Each structure stands twice: as structure tokens, then as C-alpha cells.
Length: 84
Image (tube, rainbow, N blue to C red; front, side):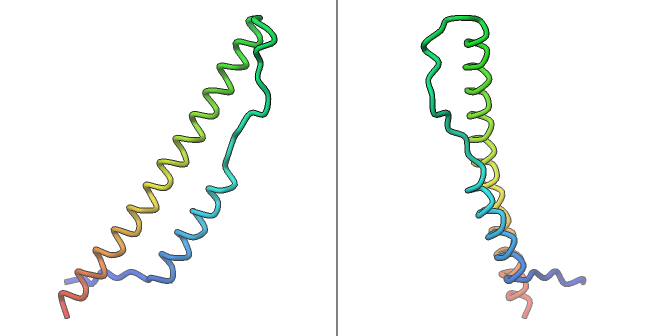
């Protein structure tokens, strides 16, 4: 049977790089656009809201993926210990 192994250092490094890069992804509009009811302003508001939501979703999904990576790593380690 082929042995499956995983490397804690590699997993930790990948998780740290990925997690730290998430802190660089953010979006927070500083101004409100309530001064105008024009269609251009409405379109801009809609676009900014969509962008903010997309970034939030990305951060959430990426965090979930990092957790899944750690779970997989731990499961492989546990399986390998059980063989010994």
C-alpha cells in the first residue's frame, strides 16, 4: 500500500502565507454618495456594494479553505500514526 504523508512545515507555511495575504484584501468606501440621486451615482453605489460583498465572500471562502487544508493534514497524520 502506498504511504501518504504530509509535512507540517509546508502546511503551516502555506497557511501562514495565505492567511497573511487575506489581510491585504479589503475594501471600505470612505465616502457616502447620498448627495445625488442620479443614475450614475446609483450605478456606482451598486458597483461598490457588489465589490465589497465579493471581497467579503472571498475572505470567508479562503478562510474556510485554509481550515480544510489543516483538517486534511491532520487526518493524514492521524492515519499514518495508526499504521505504525
